[in-house]
Image 1: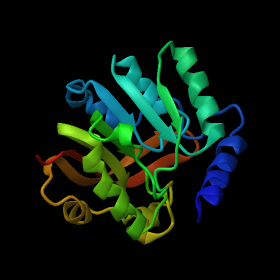
Image 2: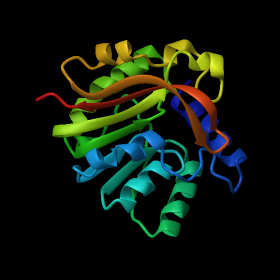
Image 3: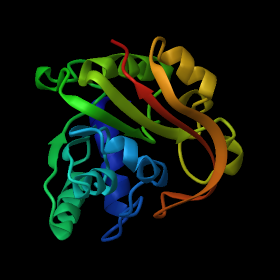
Image 4: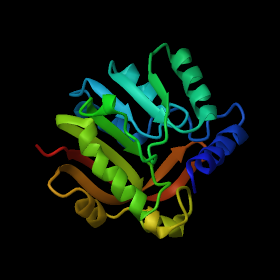
Length: 212
């Protein structure tokens, strides 16, 4: 799927949700549970942020937040959410899978990167994206990541239908050699995030510190 097709796919999903927010307006529960760690950051980047639920919440915690999203439809809804909550988020319409991404201004520009359910890519694209994440983080910066595990194919309560897009703890260890894992766990839990993610789910959580 090229960039144009990718944008069209997601814009259609967000548009079809109408006035509702496809994944709700509350922050991801795992991310919210990491507030103490996240508050050690100053400037945060939220990847593929969708309709703004995570970036707006992070801004409410007093953090400076930049959010990337490929869908203009989602960005319009995200800006509406930010206005309604009375916070500022620097929303950017960007394709994080584009060959020229990230822009130079992002290099070592963040104390934390949020990668919540960014599982719309296959193994090769994922590996390239993960390799770029170290360039985004300042020394000592952290990556906060949650995704669906391989047993999600049994639950089918959200996420991709291809096993190569899913995570295991071992996969993340292989993808991030040299990083310090502050948290890494596979578990099952109830996810209630709008109509897009709803029901018992297989999850993988990770908090990683960038190597020097």
